Length: 202
Image (cartoon, rainbow, N blue to C red):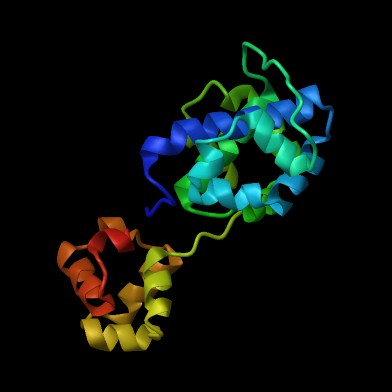
């Protein structure tokens, strides 16, 4: 899986987005879906998706909220323990990073008011378990398909160039077979034909 940025930065981004949601919904009494809409309509969504250091590392959640709401920063003390609203932001940051998918697509597929209903029991589980909440709600394009389309190859073109059967290519792109569990020789041929690294396809 290709992620948007290095995993090293993920915990900080999760905390910051979690604090943003908590500030907006708990302290400012903004409806969670309304705040989510304002977030994805602002430049902050893209900043978080790409780990733009100016915002994700250089500004406090209070400053970021002020930008989203187009107002002056208002000092607020965060709670000592996490709230369900905090958890929503934490989850969104993780799922966006894991699938390398934009917040707009995530939130439109599964609104925050629905996500927060899963606080119990998911907040006590391994964070990776939340991926199952999204698995049938978002369309994840295969990395092979993305790389193939960048080269403007059809599946048939790629089959001829790589000498990999077209049915194998189809099964990887449709997700019926996991390319990560494929034969190394096959993945190597595809990567060579697409002029990319094997890791780019997995």
